[in-house]
Structure formats: structure tokens, C-alpha cells
Image 1 (cartoon, rainbow, N blue to C red):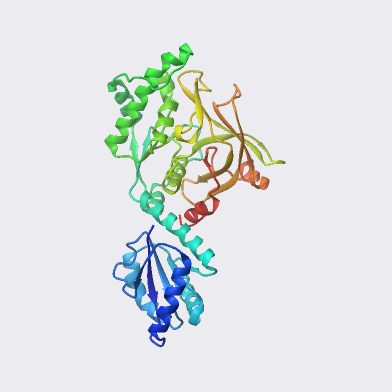
Image 2: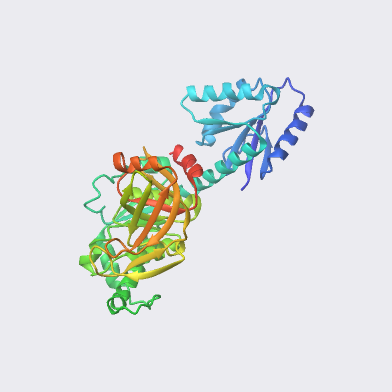
Length: 398
């Protein structure tokens, strides 16, 4: 991913000497970059733009540039410095000036390895933000009645993440299901009740696909429990399939869960497993998460079962590879986020829980306190791998 590097240099310094230091410094970083020099005409057009403060005495130059830079980009100002020729001191003065004016920024300084890692993280976050900009996310039906804390502020969502929320009546989905022809089941089962339920489960998938295309959606959340009474089936199979196809699909009309999943999809390329804690051991940090669907591309294998609460339709019991995981959630007004790393130590299949069940050992058992004293709703997003650092960097800018 290409990074654009612009330069700030005092006229008092010899350009030939500064140029030699510049080349040596940038080559040590081993990153993919384009050196733009002092021409800021296209500042902000690259996935990530850095301002390389090469010398001291550049504070006034930056102040004169600032109005133009703010017109071209709303991103934070990243000040790269080697520390040579009083460049670190100048960067500190510039950052202080930015903060006094209510603007965000950061000085990128340290060893070559640290700087390279930091630039790669920022580039990935910047690319994710570009993917999120303009995403259309559907709310099919209203949030489930029991999600009394999972409200959302559309203006904050649009301004901070670039998402457009689109409300779609549940009746429209039901009409679309009626108009969707029977589909050949892609799954097989020896259980007669499940075999009989599969045609409708696949029609629900087809109808949701039609809604996605009709409204040009990159994701949606579904008031799925209404399907239990309306068509005597569930959306579990459809959501598992759509998530694996890159369409974020959240359960129960949970908008904050959908937002969290869309962030994860944009940043890491996987929707994540939406689940709620079923039990917590504060003394050990072990937690059990469960839900009746999981993206097919997150599991090594899966089984079909009925939906847990109702005992009807088609639910998914998925088995994810054991190992590192991250738990993530943002609040509906984007004022809070939660990130925790841990290990998936086993999958289980108890009959008295939602069908996909994961036992996770938190890396820091003290984080169980969050779930018991200040949770962001009940649903949280579980994703494979440890991603705390990059998620913190994205969440920090929300």
C-alpha cells in the first residue's frame, strides 16, 4: 500500500545535505512510499499522507500551509521525523499548535523498526476508513424489543464512519420471500425436520440477497425473530452464507453489532462472529459465548441444527479453529469501544445453548469486569487472531 510523503524543510539548511539524510532515513524504513517533496497540491489523495519534518525552523511554514491542507483532507496530521537537525523539536511545536486549534495529529519517531510498524498500522487503518466511506447498511425491521440499550445515532455514524443507515420495512422482506422461488439446498442432513426446513431457509437467503441488491447494501441487520412466526423458519443459514460472501449480516436488528462487524470487515476482511456471553468466570477470565449462526468462512466445519430458543428452522453449529481471538464492540453513539484479546480454547455443543458455542480464555482476566459492570449491550463480535493494536487505532479516531 503506497504512502505519500511530503516534506517540510527550512531554507537555512543545505538541500544537498538534507537530501542525502532524507534518502538514507526513508530507505531504512523499508516501506512502499512516494516522495512528494514540498509540493502539497495532491495532499490527502493517497491512502496515507505523511509530513516529513526534515529540519527545525519549519513551524511557520506549516502554519502557512495549514488552511490549504485542511481543505484537502480531514485526516489527522502525521508528522514523520528522524530527529536530525532539530526536526523533533519542530514537530513537537507543530503538534502542540494543532492541538491548540482542536486538530488531531501524531509524531512518528523512533527506531526504523518502530516507525515502519507504525506506518503500516496507520496505512491499514486509513485504507479501512476509505472502504467504510459511503457504505450503505440496512436495518431490516426495527431492533428486537429486548435490545433496549442498543440504540444508534445516525448522524454520529455518518460523520465518524461514513456509513449511511437505510431503514427497510420487515413487510418488504416478507413480500420478497413470497416472490422468491424455491432454491436447490446447498446443504444436506439426515434429520427430517431440518431437511423439511432447508427450502425455506434457502428462500430467506435468496430474498435477503435481493434486498441487498435492490438497496445497494454492503451490510444489514435483520429483526430475525419475526421470521419464526411469519415463515416458521430462521435467518441463521442466510446470515452465515451472506457473511461468508462479504456481506455483513447481523442478527436481531442489533445496529451497534452491525457497525462493529462492518468495521471488522473493512479492516480485516472477515465479518466476525456475533455472539453473547452465556457464562463468565471472573476468577479465571474464562468465558462462554454462543449464538445460532456464524459465518461459514470462519469455521473449519459446521453442522445444522434447529434454532435454539424456538426449536424450529435451521440453526448453525460452527467449529472455529482453536487459537488466538479478539473480542470487539462499539457503542451506537460511537462514544465507547471494547477490545480484548484471548484464546479460543474449545468449541462445544451443549443442547441447552445457542448452537455455536465458544469457550474463550481472556488474556487479562480483569477484563471480565467490563462485562459485569459496564457492558456495551449483550452482543459482541469475536474474530480470529489478535488484533487489539489495529482496532484500537481505528477506534481511537472514531
